[in-house]
Length: 123
Image 1 (cartoon, rainbow, N blue to C red):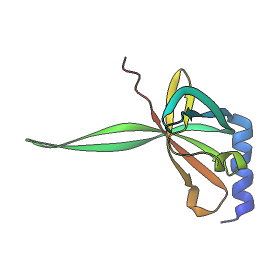
Image 2: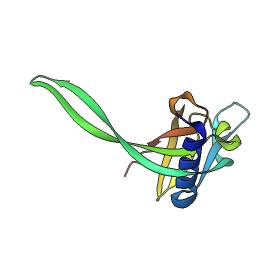
Image 3: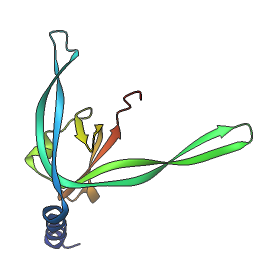
């Protein structure tokens, strides 16, 4: 794969259709417990997209499978994306998400997929 061509395509798509995402991390108290205060960790420009994951559950009658959306953000590798840790939070479209993974696509050092999980607010 021509790396320059890949970077150019992804960069153009992000600049054309992408948006800024602000990731935050909870402050820790003196006992290293998270507080209600958050600090901005990074602002990353990227593309929000969803893939489908499948959950299989064993039942008495066999197995049941259902799909579950897996939200992700496609972004170029940058200094900001290197600062993200599992558990950092993002607010997007009136929903809160937590970072569950940061994957280098094809291990090329060009682009990342930031995996997210929606935080259930109990409603």
